[in-house]
Amino acid sequence: MPTVGELLGKLRMLVGGRRRTRLDDFIIYGQVAKGSMSKVYRARDPLRGIVVAIKILDPERAAAMKKINTLYRDETEGEMAIRLRHPNLVVTYESGKLKDSEYLIMEYIDGVGLNYLVETRSPRLVGKRLKIMRQVAEGVAYMHEQGYAHRDVCPRNVLLTVDDTPKMIDFGLTVPLKPEFMRRGNRTGTPSYMAPELIRRRVVDHRVDVFAYGVSLYETFTGQLPWPGGDTMAKMVQHLNVPPRDPRSVNPQISAELANLILDATESDPRRRVPSMTEVVERMARLEEKGTPDTQL
Image (cartoon, rainbow, N blue to C red; front, side, top):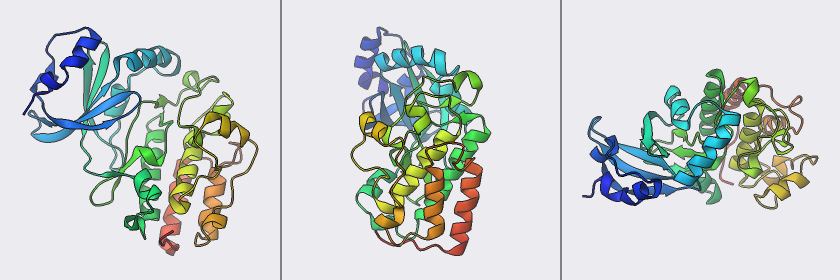
């Protein structure tokens, strides 16, 4: 079985370093994910005696994010992620540097993306959507309580474990909820889930996550986005002043109470939006207690 040193040799050459690091002790089983900014490997941690995920940021992307982060946050992804411990957030055990590139040692989730289950209309979600999305809301609410905005809430960033527990992942765009990091200008995220004030490059706050959660809730219960037409910034700009379709027009089985929560969370004006993820959690819990219908789409 190859070691991480062998598998990551090319990366070290890219970043210009040949020094050994603690990563040399890990046994790599293979790459499990690749994003625009990082690669994730499944590995065995000899120190903890468990299987973990190693996320390694692309050197060029890491350099670009470092420049951005001096404007929009004062901690690295790893430094922030280590502080966050909640049952519905992936655990980050430690982080370090490979020359110019950051790596994170994280909890390995043997699961599947919520986006895949939604897109394939998986029967696995039947009767579980409310519980899953209430737990997602609890994870985001916890982040806000700890002083952070996730900034990329979407089904793609939710993994479901084998027992259907949702785990929020990817804190690459996470920022502290401080005035100096909420100022106008930072327009990063996944277009279809970005709040209007974010697209307009205005001053933002935790309610950008409320909006993104509302879009995710809409998609989870309908299989569609509130504004159809593609996940591009140009398309989203066209919809800045257009209210979302009523989710009941897409899925008539959605209750009036759930539809109202979705529409309240996706209000274009943050002043009319659900004010906090804590309130979202409370409303989702009441829907669960009432036994709101949740059947196959």
